Length: 525
Image 1 (tube, rainbow, N blue to C red):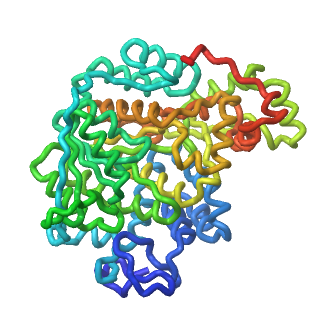
Image 2: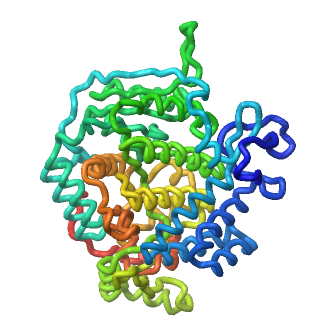
Image 3: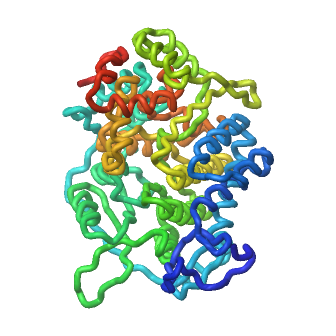
């Protein structure tokens, strides 16, 4: 690792390739860029100030890819203390930036945190700008496609009540959508410009925002099919979509908009700063995804932009959290899960027999332990982190959660919503995850179609921009109070003891036919 106080160092290369890759990279340790070593070191550093023994255990671990889920769950349990939650978040983000670098076009690297604080933003390469004006009629209400219907108005509110009764969404989420339904004038997000990093994401809010007439900045990779979709949505909408172009073309030839956020961070940072100077307050939504190490590097680059928004504007940071992670949940959720454990519709003969036959490994009761906060409240730990997603994905999502906690602790507006498990492309191409999702309904878990989830999350974003989280609440309430976990948190079993069975029942078989489907309150469809 270069010294954090130095702004220049040696040239950056990967392995035997002499060509440097510019942008945000993980720092080297012992001459290697290793996401495994980086992840373990960052999590260990996040814990050093609160649980040194656990930090040492994480740092000394022999197999991060097998151990990361357990370490992140233990870190989550420590966050029952509000002060500890904030300390872990601050220390984790500091370590993530201190252990990363920014590589310039000449291949010279600088520590990322030092570059962020001292770089001359105006000296970065300039980007061009393209704008698409919508030609459609503005939609003045929330519309949610769901099981062949489009829900709005009273029908949508009834479905939200059904989801609450079924334990699919938390009451705070339903209340947030109801507030937006009662205030359609909010939908256009007047006085704000929404910057979407990963604008073309399946779960992103772009389709709804442009129909509502919002002012959107779309940032995504310069790939023709991505921008054909974005431009098509923009033209059909009633708002404005502006995008950066890395190489303005003076000759009139076609140029695909877009930039690579991690590779082109310096130029994008300048371009966004110019947009924000004297303009409407930005809402920075982070919806970026990539496989492997690139996801961590993208998240670091986005976090640099998030810090710019948080410290230089009156803007809002917005994130979507995965439900397949470890979270602290309040007593009411714990009580609901325990109540279901006594209901034979949820915990029948097949479940009990499998539990005994497996030596208590399958269908273990959930929330066996609770954790106290400073005010005497009790929190349960739900660990739904799916190992198949890998440590890079888990770390990237944890870094976003850390930023949300720090931002709220600093009194800054933040939207951070646990989004439902959905049939996105990244899921359907993974056979293990697809099998888990296919069998999830037998455990009272609803998997959403991406267009349903995206519409709901867009409305929740609008609610958060207008209301924001309660800064006096426990930091974990940022995630738990308005979550759309699909039922994962309120089903009676410890998730890890049931998810494997869900994968087995995702296809045909005797076990799939033997497990009953829990009673529901009558959801549409």
